[in-house]
Each structure stands twice: as structure tokens, then as C-alpha cells.
Amino acid sequence: MQRLDELQSELAARGITLGVARAKLSLGRAFDPDWVSQRLASRGLRRFPTLKAAINAFTKRKLGADADQAAQVSSPAGSKADEPV
Image 1 (tube, rainbow, N blue to C red):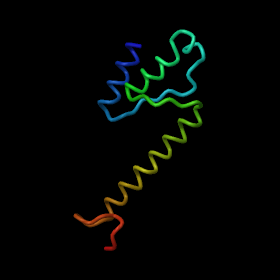
Image 2: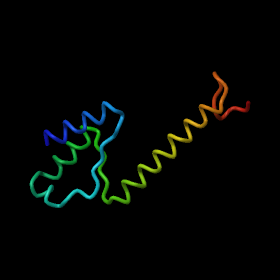
Image 3: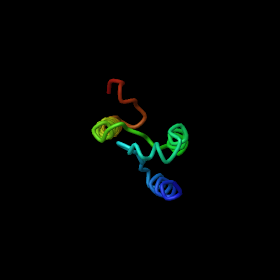
Image 4: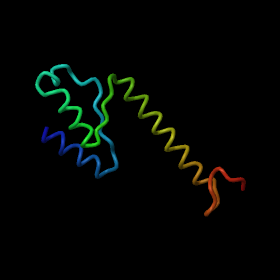
């Protein structure tokens, strides 16, 4: 768990969110499942039941960030993106 904490800290410093997809059942056998969930949540790690769910969440977040960035670029300084220009 220490290495996971170190990796998460390094990635967070770069603005990257670490997620866990399809965690093996053996993880639940080695650690108390409630403890694992609390540990992931307390470190800001996202947990996904499948790889597809993780990819969909990433895509949705990326599209939202791109839309926000496009709105900021196309709006004149000081105006809000949803206001008429």
C-alpha cells in the first residue's frame, strides 16, 4: 500500500487522478473490503467495477474539460460563456 500511496502522490502532483479498475477479488481477501474502500476514498482514488466504466468516466471528464476550455477561449474576457456576446 505504501507504493500505491507514493504513486498516487506523484501523479497528483502532476494533476493526474489515479483510478482502480477491476480490482482483483484477492485484494478483498488480503485486506478488509471496507478498509480498502475507505483507503481509496481517503486518498482520492477512484474505483471502477470494470475497465469500460473507467474509460467511460475518463472520456466524459475529458469531454467536459474540453468543452469548458473551448467556452473560455471563445468568450471575451470578463463575460460568462452562457451570456450572449
